[in-house]
Length: 67
Image (cartoon, rainbow, N blue to C red; front, side, top):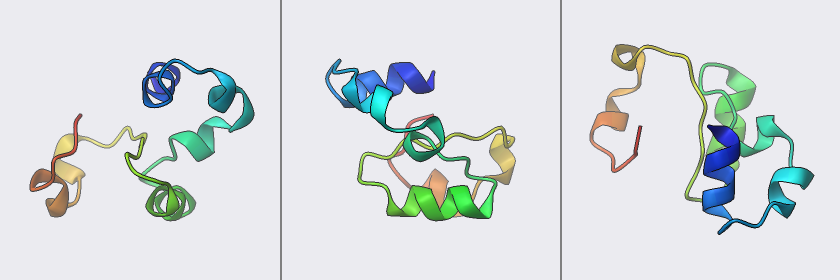
């Protein structure tokens, strides 16, 4: 899924996918390092997680984020 979203974000250009590691393109929300990387990434952000939906921050539900 991360590869597909990365390609969509870059209009099908695979150079970004090849040059940027997975953990920088779609950092894990549940790790401190991943959270910091996600906040520093340019919008629109791609964020990976295996958290159940009920554990997401409350602000998430009021945002326009797509799941």
